[in-house]
Length: 494
Image (cartoon, rainbow, N blue to C red; front, side, top):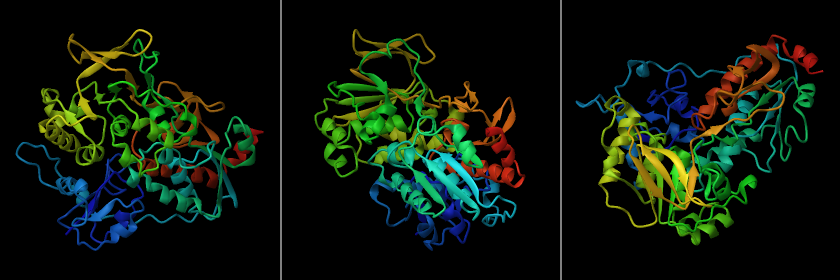
């Protein structure tokens, strides 16, 4: 029986190169690899050898006959990726490009013109930082020092993934392997800008690679967001994950209904955790304070609201499958699934999402507490006198208003980078100004300064997206090192 990919992937691509029959796509040399929600195994060519299972660093692949009931749907998702389009065109056709022979795995090019040693400072220790370190350390001349302001490394892989998503958190095992390199030093509890300056790093290292992420929330600019009872979903994630910045961010769970504005994966995580059975969460590494608060929670319903229709939903298909087939209690109002944009629905992942949402809408309203996915609602203002009491929405594209009573409102409309002293900031994009990872000032590269991750490209993609992103930055950094540009950088820093 063929093997099955059962979750969003880490971007390592080890499984792709381990497969002897080229049945896992997209591959790193195919156009969708950097943006794909997950990889897919073609059941018609899989020979059930198990090489991919051994290669996968995050346990995302299982033999088809061994996947649990909660993941059975992934077998159809994998197969559907390769199926011919049905009569109603809800399946995405397989491009002939995806059938081409797989290029041999890239081996690190011998770089004999690098300084030896080549000293690199990386600011941050999240996924983009760890992937960048992994790429750099393929070269024996490189020595990497990583600066992390928290007491634990790995950033969002540790503090941003929901505690009941242990399979996603297993990417930490890969990062632990990278961290064991004798040429990598991780300095914890060291904040650049407080304990050491960027200028000091530029004096001590050939190059500085900033991988500090996008640490602030994108603001929701509507009246009433300043009321007590309104907070960012990000702060809730940090609270239940024990992030030291959010130990006091626990919401008052004394209301029967909460609203989450935004419907990306973070929004679903928050709604799922706040309506979960605390006894089930007790087996995870959720913070003790959060678990105690959830045991006393009064929440009976959380409404996750999207401005556009379900075919435009920001959450990923793997996340929706985990929600629908897992222990969460979830429902969709059938009325929200009317008037869909057929052009968008016919794209592969969107078609799968809509089919699954229709299945959820056909289920009875679940027992409380439960979460409801709502669509076509644009927030106008938070209602309340002294505290949040609800949200006024406008039905998107109309002049009809809908008031939804709620004592808690969580905003989850994305992240945003913040300016970094000493680095040119692109305020429109919320990123450090850069070209392919090289920091630029007025479109001119600044020698010795680089960025990767969300602070480079904006808050898009998944954990695995950082693999491709970091490789691009590192390739440019090493090319500059070979070209002798870092001596100039050191002179500029002085």
